[in-house]
Image 1 (cartoon, helix red, strand yellow):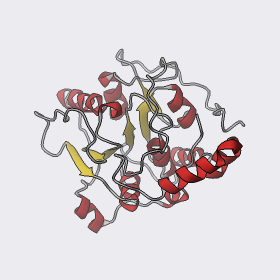
Image 2 (cartoon, rainbow, N blue to C red):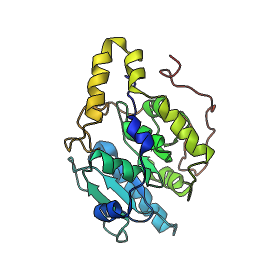
Image 3 (cartoon, rainbow, N blue to C red):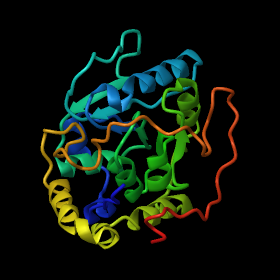
Length: 259
């Protein structure tokens, strides 16, 4: 895996102002999922988790899907209360950052990723992250995200229900997320892979020049094109037995961070 970097603008991202919220159609509180609307993003499992929360009578924040249509069957939303799931379509980089920064958390249930920048970018804004448990997620996100089995809607529902209702920018958890994301820079990408420094620079350019060609509001090639199944889950996660497993040592460092 080639370590990618988080653009510095993510650390300065602010929640959308009133006019932007109205233009995009954002509710007061919401969770966000970023990516192409395609099977690999596993959004059907996320919708199933929402259905379980609603069936259990639990309050749920609306889900905002950011990214243009890709391919595959349309999401089955019948029976969900109006306003439960909203889609913004493609957003430019500035709007994308404000939507993520203003969310109550980002959910990234992908079946597989080559790197997966959206959850790392969300950490840069201080937002909580729930992601699929895979070897890539464990390396990139460390202990700063809640990891769930990719196709386990019950486990995902539990993780969603346990997201904090509110956080202050001064909270230690917010600072820890931002500090973790700050480790992943484009300079470190080039330093870790001297032979691929040109590739790191090229990906950085694409990362800062968004295009509707990719469902995450970016051009193709941001480290999300690998076609491999997720590794067997081994790190802490929420399972269908509704018990929380042991979390790995908080001092864990990724291989790229440790050199």
